[in-house]
Image (cartoon, rainbow over all chains, first blue to last red; front, side, top):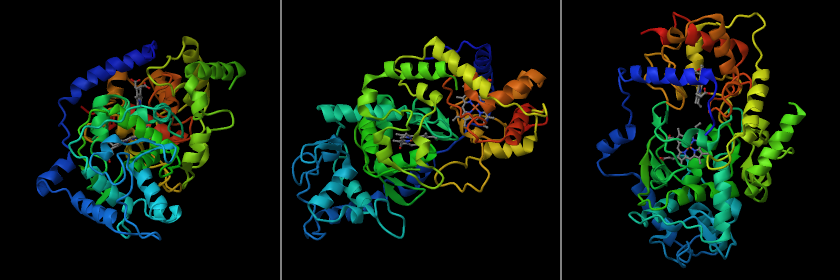
Length: 272
Length: 208
């Protein structure tokens, strides 16, 4: 922690303490549209539709090879979906790299089904007009780990490297606004406007931030994956576009997931 | 930027984390590292050069469990950033608080999805409480409600407030607050307008 040895900074802190007292008098902002939506919907999460579509996609023969994804190895052996998402990202020896769920799904589409990479990537995010297979498949796979405990160990050098890189990315300041992930997600109990921000650099916040993804986004009417979440935060960070499945995206996901170890998986969740 | 400062920065970066070099993420004088170059693509107004770090960004990217800034680095950031502040030539710091309120509300600007032809905002409410009537405010920064009332509106306060918004790091190295003037997010008139929002006795920020 940097010593704030400037009188003005100290005055600023005293001022903050003063006004914090006065803010208590103000109407406490209530803002949880998701809670309202949940109350309206009961226990129904529209992500259920993505789960169903994802299961159909998983079992239907597709692509030039005309095979299903049922032989796809998500890390626990070919075809094992139950619990697989609770151990991702992980190192895959067959690919020689660390992969997250979306990247592994892409890998299986390309290597098993013979779908060209570019073709598969065209619909990485759905947009009303066009549905995304990734979002449906990710919802299905995540559902099969609901209730399981997240366990993403740094059990080999590739995982250690990914985590170290993700951590570095998390604190990497750049762009017009000097933001890093830590600007918005490095402290506990702060918010942007009324949006609560989880502190992803420690376990409790990382668990809250991670365990519900992929998630149905009420504001978009779509299921979104962690890859989507990260590229949208980079947009807010004023940086260029994060590439789907890029090394940086997987490193950051590894950083968040490992910090979140011990979380009880609860995805697909529901978000604002 | 003077040579000594650049050198100190390089030494600082080298001490920081040996892992940096091997991971290939750290910015170099040639721009961002290989992993970043391969992981992003330019989009809209957000070009790849946004990934390059200036000296302050580089020094301010250390994880909290890494080495803290040395006294010397701290002082050097403060000095170089203080020197960057361009005060208004007309000596006037107070603009129009009404325009300032619009700037404080506006979160648009510089995102790959934003139209560069539209004026960009300061998004002060994202992080600060300001006017009492606005309950949708963030808490990353301290509350600025009643700022002028508590601080007064003398020349020195006006000058400090202008400079703080122009370059937050001139007073607190590695602040979470953007360097609005230094990075060209807000122009001189816009900064004057938000200074007025904070200091003008008529501004809703100062209404109890």
